[in-house]
Length: 486
Image (cartoon, rainbow, N blue to C red; front, side):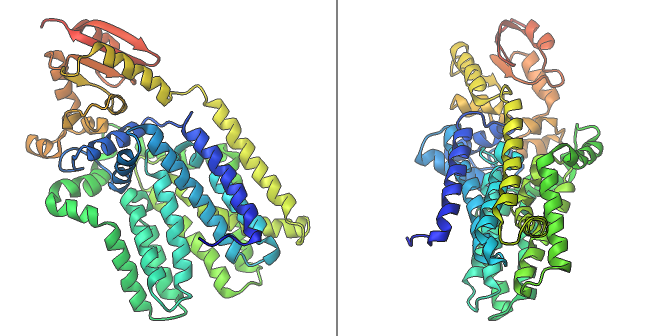
């Protein structure tokens, strides 16, 4: 491996510090409730179960396969997948910084712009909170930045390898989460229209071949079970995401308007907007370099529009726009710094914005330090293990099954699937059980124990306590066991 040029060493050093911070956070406070579902899916895959066919998994599966691989290589633990995801986020931050170091038009600002981009990505609040988790955020963040970098190289080179790599990386990202699906068509069209060397049609074919290769595992699952795969990847998101979610549209509008509540995000967007306007109207840079800023703007708009169309949508989804906003913001801080400070003294404005980003994220993480974490669920899992024999049927949250290394009944692999009320034949095919049927199972004593951490519908203490001889509370979670005779 070639050593980095001396001017790159500061960037590498900053990214190493960022990686250390993300890794430390991933092993301590990082947690999101939904990642229990993703961790359990990886555990099931490791045990030989197939998504869609053997259990309900309404996501594209590549991140789950990736997590299963690392669980097999290292340990079947949330710490393993968190560490891998933290490194993925760190590499994404390094890649966008490396891109700025090589291609930012103002030579004197290349190193400051590179560090600026890396810091803004790796310290973004949403990226820090949700990137180093078992969910697909870190995985997809890495691959969309890689796809962008390969696409930028593809238009300049006559050979097709960079186009193939861009398609492969974009395909991996979409195979990890459909939230990143717009990246592939935007990059492909950009390569076609901005190509400057070699055959654009060969590059089109190479890009498409790379994308198909990346999603071969999904195509294989579709060949084995087309109905289940189509439902989980397409139909569920089109027709069932809003089921039992009242006011989903209002929630989405409040989410999008909530940008004003986050100073760091608002600053990033404003700097990015300023960067776009500067590049379009004022910058006297080469057309090829300016086009790369326009590509970042197109990717940001395409991702934001696509993410906003998901009902319900969430603020964390927009973290996929962060690398492209950061590069646009580098142009914005360059223009502001050159006008208000000095074009030859870039470090003060860069350090100021980086400090604001770091302090804002630190404050927000401090404010949520007492929220539910994996150590709380580990205490709950220990209690369940103590009172529930391994051979007795258990109804529990996905994270508890994962921590117990206990493979659940397939109908219990996805808690969200219980909101679906499907025809019996379709429900059996998809391994789905409704909440009403689940309630009847509990009432008739088919589960030796029930664990839950969130009140939901009928599943509350007042309904469950009369049905069991014993109960215990562990933090925010409740465990009921040994059903009374019916």
